[in-house]
Amino acid sequence: MKTMDLLEEFERKMIVQRYSPSSIKNYKSAVRSFLQLAEKKYSHPLEITETEIEKYIYWKIEKHRIGASYQRLIVASIDKFYLSMFNRQLNLKHLYPRSKNKSLPVYLTAREVSRLMESVTNLKHKCIVQLLYGCGLRLNELLHLKLTDVDSKNKIILVRKAKGGKDRVVMLSPLLLESLRHYYKIYQPEEYLIEGQGGGVYSEKSVQVIVKNAALKAGITKKVTPHTLRHSFATHLLENGTDIRYIQELLGHKSVNTTEIYTHVTDIAKSKIKSPLDLL
Image (tube, rainbow, N blue to C red; front, top):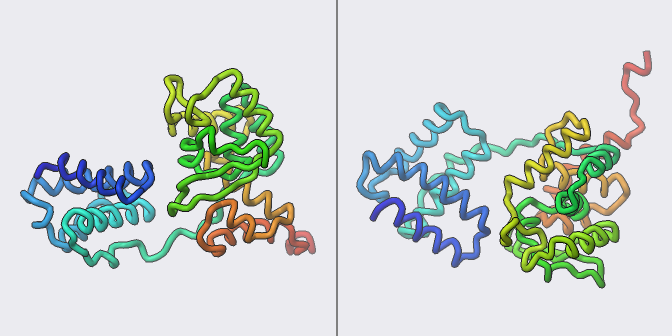
């Protein structure tokens, strides 16, 4: 079976298993790169040993300088591919990075968010930024919001099939609702809340560019991505005294341990501890 045929069948299986479009795209891409290199030496994937897979990961680290998160994706993709396609359980645990990067999330101050918002003049772009920050959405969640997910009466938005396959509810700010009503009258989207020019799902890259350009225009020197606005949402809720369990629900985190990373930022910011420099 050719690589393209295998990838198509792999995609069908993931669709049936209800993987998100972004997960399917990432898994396919990682497996495609692996198979295209392997087919130069092997006629079928089942001929490839776990030792050869280990050599491939080593090559990716040395040659392409891949990070830990991408390494984790490659190993998970290959593991999933063999299990789905050939019912073969590989022993690849030793190929996963030892531990995740525990770096603190980059976030914007409330003033920086205000400046960023003010720098966006296009109405659709403003709604995108307000949704990311005002609801703490992941980029993929924003792109797949449908008109029917907005409950203006109860001031909530339903986020369907989020990461981990769970639905959740987030708040709908009156300010955001006003922007969305104005936007709807002008753009008349048919299915998705934010649609491309020809309808359908809006471009992921376009959202990234919108956020990046807005930050540059606002004079913000930090690296700002759509996820930075999600981090800012969580951090500002904590700073305003919102219970961490509520924030966990709003973000769609399985464990409160994931949400607690934001407390490391706010605890120090709120603390009354003086720097020894001030005591000189």
